[in-house]
Image (tube, rainbow over all chains, first blue to last red; front, side, top):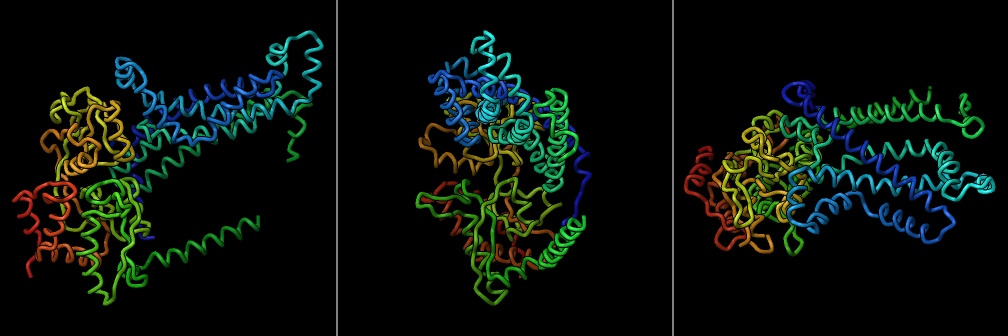
Length: 241
Length: 285
């Protein structure tokens, strides 16, 4: 191949600073969106299994509406379509205070919340029904049974698929560059603009994403081991697979 | 493990044969395929855009079609077809280096940094950056954008200059022109900065052109060139010869008039000094 790599563009000039800024923004955006998504996912996933039909409908609507529209459209929606509906003074305040970050955060969190919700539902439904009945028979109300018995077990069961979804969320945070959020992919493009060295910049971005994802996977694996309930999901540990 | 080694060997062999293919020069590739593949824009009127009839047209495309293709066909002794692919500020250099396209013909500014990665033809258009604002905006030029929210296209030379010259302006960068323009329409940004001629194109295509103003002196110098893979003098020579012949024969000015003349898509009179500059680029026989 006739292309000559010039890796030094990644640490000369401002490139290093930009990559670092991009990394911080990606982490902030992903972490905040993850918290929102987990919260929405747990609530909505639980509601999809409760014996009260209207609550199930609300949550089904949320899931199907938000997961079936492309994330890119959601980004544009929260950034371009919502602000004009607000009073003008509030609009200007938002525009002056980095509304693109919060629009990106909301789009990402709500979209992934819908996906987390399905994972949560599968976790809850994998718990034998007798568990729930036993909880009720000890005198717990339905909300108590969910809060104290069902959700704590389900959350432990779904750690592997949640890891998967969390990695997706981190990578999807790059879609926020379409509305001008200066995250990691944005900054790799910035380096490309300044140096015209696209391959080097993209390689740096790729490696950073890879390392972030591996770190998340490792943390989640550790959490999975820490919170495992012996006899429930721990039986496959000791290396059979 | 053995299977892994085998897979690795297969991949190596495949990339080896791919490398052999890469060794072909652009000119050899054009001769073999009978096609010149250009990377161009879909939303930069009047240089390259998709018009109302869904045709992919523009000044840059016409220049390739009517100045460079004839030169290529003559040199290779056969008719060369034109194929268009979309390019953006982020993808154009990788498109060239990976051989996906042979020539970038859109609105690419010739810069020193870019010259380290690609080669440029002679300049075929000169413009400078300005601001597009809604009527009544307090923004009058680069001197009045401090603290203001300015939209720019990511990967463009303008964003870079604003960042350096007015660091306290709030720069909002969008991947493409329609999103950046939308941000000004909605108020997320107070002005959109790009090369003057592109703003004129955007204004002409806006639903209400009279609501918009293009303000400020040129705060940058943007010579547009056609970019190609580095170190291929034979191809560069043909591209330059095609452009120079078109300037010399007057074909260039006919095309200019078609797109920028009083009846063109974006009326933008050719300044006498620009015309002189274009003519001076032509190397005499």
